[in-house]
Length: 78
Ligand SMILES: [Zn+2]
Image 1 (cartoon, rainbow, N blue to C red):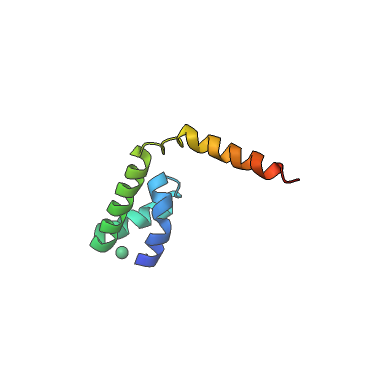
Image 2 (cartoon, protein in one colour; image 1 turned 45 degrees about the vertical axis):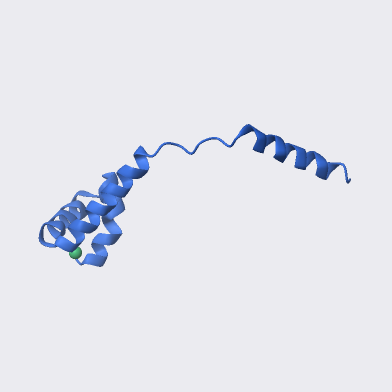
């Protein structure tokens, strides 16, 4: 397996969605290739970071009022 092939499999590997033979190939490659090991580590950290990140805060209420006001204002022109 080449580095490019592994890069394509990383997402599946992290999700546990790879068929057994591909998973084995990926593991063997990671065992011998420090470059890809670092790459996968980085991906894992990113995935964990995204999973732990809190949801974005809701917009402030005045923003909603402003949007509604703008929609209403647009309608008066009909
Ligand atoms: Zn590699």
